[in-house]
Image 1 (cartoon, rainbow, N blue to C red):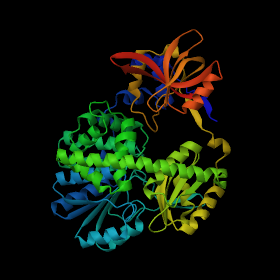
Image 2: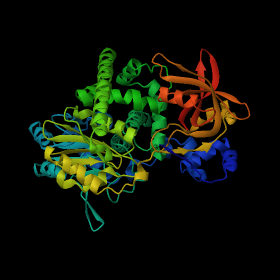
Image 3: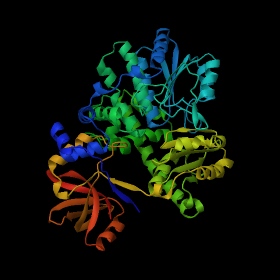
Image 4: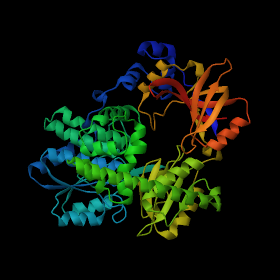
Amino acid sequence: MEKWFVSAKKADFKEIGRQFDIDPVIARLIRNRDVTGAKAIQEYLRGTIQDIPGPELLKGMKEATSILKQKIREKKKIRIIGDYDIDGVTATYILIKGLERLGARADTYIPDRITDGYGIHMPLIYKALEDGVDTIVTCDNGIAASKEIGFAKEKGLTVIVTDHHEVPFIEDNGEKTYILPPADAVINTKQPGCPYPNKNLCGAVVAMKLIWALYDDSHIPETEKEEFLELAAIATVGDVMDLQGENRILVKEGLKRLPYTKNKGLQALIRVTGLEGSRISSYHIGFVLGPCINASGRLDTAARSLRLLQCEDAGEAARLAGDLKALNDSRKALTEKGKDAAIQLIENTDLKKDLILVVYLPECHESLAGIIAGRIREKYNRPVFVLTKGEKGVKGSGRSIQQYSMFEELVKCGDLLDQYGGHPMAAGLSLPEENVSLLRKRLNEQCNLKEEDLIPKVIIDVPMPISYISTKLVEQLSLLEPFGKGNTKPLFAQKNVKAINSRVIGKNHNVTKLQLMDEQGYVIEAVYFGNIPEFMDFLSARDKISVTYYPEINRYQGRETLQVIIQNYC
């Protein structure tokens, strides 16, 4: 059962509408996203790259650029150690392309998910020493690798950490002591004392800021800096960063450029996924392009995705893009199988009673744990850890709800874990198999969630009559894009509408098409994509319903009609 709430934040919506030449409904939507004051509203509506902070504000940036400029001058060998997900792959690409442009002797290593695990490990340091590497630059990892980086320093390596994950800490009597790795420079907005205003940059944007700072010092044209915006957008959406302030501007600018990208790999991926000639949105990054880039790191090697981004030959790019799409199709089937197994386990055991779900699927491919955890979280609306049996012990990923900081709760279980890291909303971990049941017990015992925290909340932006919808209003909604975490797609609602002429359509019978009629007789087209049999049964038993919806313009065979997408009903 869901609970519906109306967002009731107040402002002079008519005056804001007049000032910025927008509908008062648009003004209300902006206020609901906590954007207040003329300057912030102006940036939200019309912000550009010129409005984002410079890289020099990042703590550690001055030291990192000074070190790298010297290493480039001295022709020292630099190795970039990335990560196997979308953020890590794009961050690695940005660093290698940028450093090579500056004349560096640089190469890359992205750890293999199965054989290496996450981040910088001892074998990677030994390999760097063996290969004559002088300097290691991490991206999207390293902040929690104090032991490994300490060892690298003992062996004479220079280490620069660029990361965005939470800084590990020890808590004593409510006081947190943060543990930074002993690197030569650390760039991470979450480290204590960093003045950079946006604490929610993804790893690829942190890497891009480092390259931008180096480009500025070398007087490289702005146009070359902007070539990284497409990758910054892909990583920001793909790593589920809040689309607020700077992040939203970066994604908006990147999306503008993506259909016209000069990157042959991205061109091929856009083509193979059927997006050529389309307006690419944050949805397409999150659910079409991004999963293909991620798929190689899950089922094969992330080096394949990096090769795609680096590819200069159109034929080779087409082959690689086709491989990634095929891998993603395979990943989808395996995910569905793992999700079904997890639901069976929860429904048929006492797991269902737990507020924190710890689901152990030994046979599941460990790379799918995070996706399955996300699906289970959606179904049960509670924090979920999905654990799988790896080559060495148990590995897993977690996905959380807003009321539960997954990373902070794992800190309290550190004695049970071999490794862990992440964010409030997502985390990765590894542990001995004998500690699985202990972890489940501890997480649930220390949990402060209440039953009401687990009830899904539907936040309605504006209770708006369907008769108010117009083409102009729908077009103005695009000013609020890109949508995603922290800048959700607006949700409208109306009570007591009659559902008429409902019918099931689609090759797979997965869409209900109908019309909604209000009490004054106004009619609008509507579609619903959820559980179709349940929805049709609901309609057949009632004269009137209440709906939440999103309006859009349906363009079909040269005709344009207003319609609403029904999101929830009661």
